[in-house]
Image (cartoon, rainbow, N blue to C red):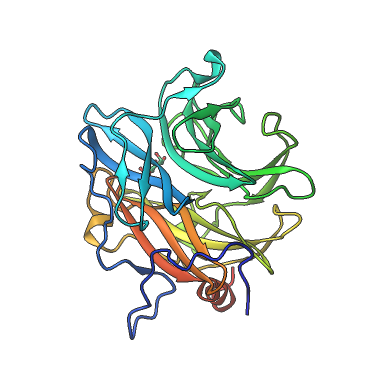
Length: 328
Ligand code: BMA
């Protein structure tokens, strides 16, 4: 039995796998949990991240406005399902040369020690990775951008590894990048990043074609006694555009740029109407996962068709099984 290393979270959102269902990840029966008009200003709320906070949950949400400006907003919830999202975007404190806003999207939230770190795709002469921290989800302190442009999908590990902070990311280009592998970078202080190691890439041919165009880290890696579980997105280019599916890999605990296992099959794909139809069709885009170390339960938060937010469930055993049964 693979064990999650972390906190118990017995009250996290959960539904048992429906009887007779054979897939490794199953959807919440009342999906989507956040509708596109969840705030008065929003055109869409998707690709968002949540964490346990105080006696409930807090999160950072991507809301595109009705002028289609992309920004990130704080939100709170008692149960992880019903969310109250602020109607004004997060205002960051920090060096005005860094806090200048071009656009912000696809946030991740990672608790390290007593701080909640936010990473997001930050417009700064092209997309790069913004970094900030908060203790209360009210005041947010922005640090230096982690990398030179162009980069997307910065995802921190939830603790230092061998004395270093570590971040996964996906170097990219200025547009809808037609390539992309996952890298792991290290920092002693969350300001200076280096030792950029390649983690894994796209899969050529038809071995695992759903991840043949680009891949990118999704949820904060989940620590287990066998390695870090990385839930990520993989993209194929079709005659009708990109399709975003979800996959899983297992990274070495001490050297997380080393891949110990990876699934050839996707674990979730756009199949429900709200995943297939929206502002950008056929997108399931994971950005967060809640876990319960006691039971091995995992709740994945994912953007659906760049329009609404969905919730899906799995367990550490299901993810280990899919990598064992369908190895790449
Ligand atoms: C990526 C990002 C994501 C988005 C995806 C599909 O490049 O912009 O925010 O979900 O495209 O449109």
